[in-house]
Amino acid sequence: MGVGKTKRMPRAVREQQMLDAAVRTFGQRGYMAASMDEIAELAGVSKPLVYLYLNSKEDLFTACIRREARALTEAVRAGVRPGLPADGQLWSGLRAFFTHTARNPDGWAVLHLQARTHGERFAAEVAAMREEIVAFVTQLIAAAAREAHRDPDLPEREVAGLAEALVGAAESLADWANATPGASAKQAAATLMNFAWAGLGDLMAGRPWSAPEGAEEEPVAQAG
Amino acid sequence: MGVGKTKRMPRAVREQQMLDAAVRTFGQRGYMAASMDEIAELAGVSKPLVYLYLNSKEDLFTACIRREARALTEAVRAGVRPGLPADGQLWSGLRAFFTHTARNPDGWAVLHLQARTHGERFAAEVAAMREEIVAFVTQLIAAAAREAHRDPDLPEREVAGLAEALVGAAESLADWANATPGASAKQAAATLMNFAWAGLGDLMAGRPWSAPEGAEEEPVAQAG
Image (cartoon, rainbow over the protein chains, first blue to last red):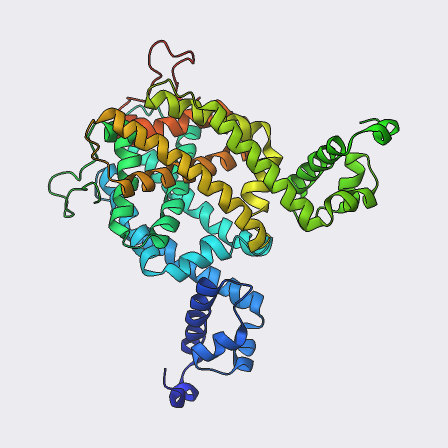
């Protein structure tokens, strides 16, 4: 980000740099403690320019939430491979989710910690993203149930509840993985896959879920 | 709550009435929208008395969070029956959790929605409760793993991750159950038990978890 070049940059590029700096600052220091001075400095622009482009701290934070929410939902949607059997689809989606949250810890902190802690306006932005993800997971589980039984015996409400449970578990594990030194995205995905697919019962009996033969990922090992 | 009787009530009793009114108001209207006038009126006391006892809106809200957090953790601890096998313990704990959140929807909204949405001070109060519950669930899972294998092969970190997943799933389902007309505490507990114990894999194959014979609860049916 050479300061000498900023004048020639198109607005869209410079705005993305401001958002990069803002996500990092909000994610690491928290919404309240983050200052516009700090964000402008990190972005290599003047503070008036940040206000000119993004209007206010509130609007800048909202823009961060929207960008990070879109990036996360797109990563999950792109990660799920529709040709696979149900467990393979779930595994590919979980890998994509935890890889994204591990690579973008500040973005995840903005979405799951900061946005929910600083007022209803921001919380509502995240709630909209969450509803979209729950709907997507509900579809996946319903499709898996149809695949398993031609006459599906998992009622709609049960499927909705399972999707809520899965999304809540994933959110909680993403926080945990990012806060636990040495915990990897793959390990978090494997833990949730074991939990959600094999279930604690099979897990206790020493029967973890394992990837079907021919899947390109290696089998899920108990993380060490 | 006869107004005529308030003068003879001991402070502790009157304070509980204020907290009852505050939890209800904060839970139903949200922290920002809730007014001290409204809370005092609902409690049947004067507003100055609320300030005298609880000092400020912030302190009153903090007192609500602490009381509701204690009630929830005590309900879960009291619900888990230590003599049962691992799945029976989990089932009894989940039943206690969802029964409590269903009976106290305003308390749950204060803990899981309001307290996390209105600043770091309140969020930290809830985080402390959550850590306590995660530690408790971690112990349960570790004990179950020891019971299943004399030489435990679930490493400590995997157990911690499973506990995070279970707690996150339970939080998410409690929100969902309280927001979904007709969803019962028992159904939410059964959904999570199926998810967590039998796993989606067994569930898809038509093998839900069922309570062991002789347990006093009836088997878990797929909710209709």
